[in-house]
Image 1 (cartoon, rainbow, N blue to C red):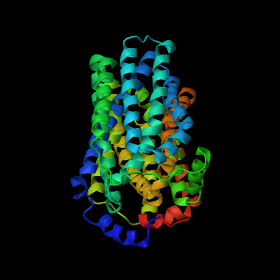
Image 2: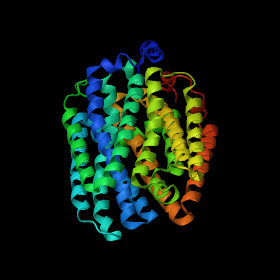
Image 3: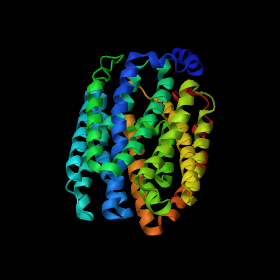
Length: 429
């Protein structure tokens, strides 16, 4: 944990002039330029894979396996990913992960010319998604661990807000372009664009300048012992544990992203272009909230605000679940995205401020596993629920579960509910 002097220098930076200096920081500009390319490619690929799999199978359960194929390797690689990120160069690990992402896009491009309808047609796609999940097991925690090395600590909260907002901006263009290009020319053109995005991100990453030449302390003990130390650290910090577990269960039980292809095709009848618009609605809301936060980040009553944001997320998903009007569905997803951005901003700042640099890889690996569980495993949950209950009942049940999680965590994590400033989380045990 940082000494008390860090706190006195951090508060003014969080309260005033949050964004003017961060955008002039050369290391941060190089970092977000590289990440924008990779996120753009990831978003395009996600919408095209989802539509292609559903188009080939017409089976909601097939969409569940899209999430599961990416989640399982992340689960299996959690231990080595966190340990390696704390011991070796984070830039090199991140570049290697994005290079594997480019290989996956190339493989999907090749498969898109071979696939046939039915389960047999998507087997190869699932295999590539397993490899892509392996790359994400390393890229996610490496990204989160690298950012505090790029900017000074007093600019970290502003950097988190600006970084999140810009990444969501890529999430607007990615799904829209992916949906339109798939409608016009199928998967080959879109996968080729994804390959270029990952390749450019890998090249641009070499321009990122870090403030520290080395990001790890000397390794002691076995990999299991080092990772166990990271788990014990998380368990000893109820604010960190409550923050990442709240996100896990709220999105795992209430997310509707996996159901968007079915809603676009069978409920709203808007086709692949409409699917891209629906996915982008979440990103539009996130960018709007993120732009505001990057200019005026707050640092008061952060715990209570996060609970309110997750509750709004659940209510917006409930509205989307029962809507049969495209523009009402779009508006509901927009609100859900804005609420999610507020939650992401608070969660990211609480975790980063509470974690020493030598343990960031392990803590962020666990954090990214929780995020991956809420997203990829959440897609599996949504797909299976839709197959068993029907798409609309499954979405309604998910929204109700999110609200239930908010109520339970509000009662169970008092320190998280009452934390006022980000700096306070560093000393909360």
